[in-house]
Image 1 (cartoon, rainbow, N blue to C red):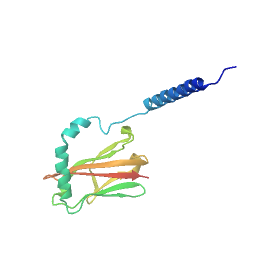
Image 2 (image 1 turned 45 degrees about the vertical axis):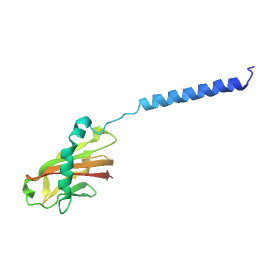
Image 3 (image 1 turned 90 degrees about the vertical axis):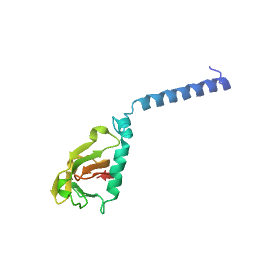
Image 4 (image 1 turned 135 degrees about the vertical axis):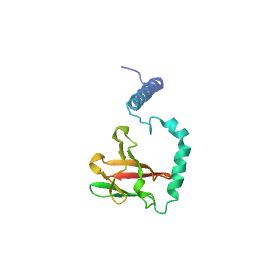
Amino acid sequence: MIKFNWATAVVIAFICFASYILFLVYKTSQIKIDLVSKDYYAKEIAYEKTYEKIKNSATLKNNLKIIQTPDTILLIFPDSAEALNISGVITYMRPSDANKDVKESIQFSYSLTHRTLKSKLQKGLYQVQVEWSDGLKNYYFEQPLYVD
């Protein structure tokens, strides 16, 4: 029979603690970590241009609106004198998994409305990033969106 004294208790406690720490190290090494973007540092250096685009967006009378319907996501662009010349890119960025990001060119289905089918997106949180130009100025808009 083993004699159970305080030294044995300390050794057992240390073994349990070390096992727990090793288990945590193993579990955390199995988690997939995605950066916001692969070229994060280059984008951070060029953020001044994005900031100018955000300031241009703030000067618009009406800002971009995002409306979610049962089967589509509508992006309604603000009225502009150069509305016919609008071109740009819409990115639905999924913070939890870069493989689920969706990127589209702006195409109007009617008036100044871009339509994205929800079937392209999976249920969850997305960061909608819209970068567009009306031929005179460049604009940038960003808003979180939960697709249900």
